[in-house]
Length: 527
Ligand code: ZN
Image (cartoon, rainbow, N blue to C red; front, side):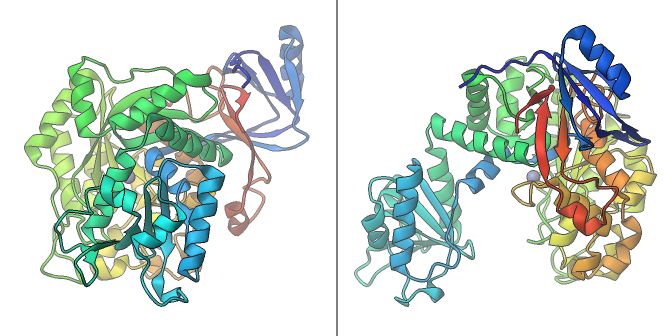
């Protein structure tokens, strides 16, 4: 492994360099020196700087450079787990299932095998798989294979033992005629088994998971990540990765889950602790659930289930307490709020603390947000992390909200026009990490996918400039680092990408297919 050298001078000339999007700034050349941008402008000046400093010249030959994308809200550990999951969709028999696990084990030799997507309806054997089937393929390490629906799984005997499910008495464990557990578990036992098994991973495995997620992010041109709900195990894995071989990955900004935040703040650690690669920024809380499960907390009942208005997941006192502690120590607070009642709660607590100053407090998602709340968030200078790809994934949302409230769903344009700073993100692995999918969703809002509320909210469509702006500068602002990141300006960190087409020269369907050719962090190529 080569030692990372984050130094030197590189001069990129003959490019089409999008330095920023509001206003749109296009330049020919950029000089990166010792991790930062020394110059952005014309070839001639860049070349003379480069000659003076004896830098390396990179001829872009007309290629396109953009600032790196900043995903302000994603889950690095869950993404790593998803990338390490064996895809079992379309498997036709228990025999094939066994073969696939055996081969996967030989190829990757993971500590735990996690698979997903099988369906016994497709099996030649016309029966459910059992732990004895799986034991025949892999018996010496835990295996959990989740059914396509997510509500059932089959474990091998080793996994049943480790999770304690072999002997546990609950109706969620399937038994044969003689009362012996077959290895099939359903409903809550699936999540329980998965969390016990992933909790039993070694540090090396955890490091491997976050590393693979980071490499994937680099390949998509994501140069900074807002890692939400980071727990102790993942934070330790990040520190271990950082110490191992220098940092050749996207930058990470950590938002801790409340338990870790308590421990860290008790140690007297201040917000912003870390360095330019890995920095602890804040704490993530949940005020409510999701629209899909009807647990997002609405001020009026669900249109398709009038007995339900969702769930409040945090009390006002708890929220106030965390906000007070975080503000004192310089941490940002990021609160998940999807329904308008949850947003009312968050805004009312933020209001008590006054206009957001140096520390920017955040609302995550803000999916169903009323016009009066948009005014209030703008007045309080609250920043909002949005996930435009939800527009396409939540195609059923009109049933939940009805024809009046649907106008309040994902009102990006209105929020932007009221001066709220938005950060773009994916909530990956909930939505695809690929930034171009999110940009496509923000610019089209489901026009081509026949989304039921397209007509109701088509005025919330953003332009391509807007979408790129919020994915770069906007996200940098949301994480409080717009002076360092988010555009190509002299003095900022040299994080940028080379792409295979000019997004302003092709139509939006082709923008979606843009490929990232190279990714640079601090002027060094990491992909
Ligand atoms: Zn999330």
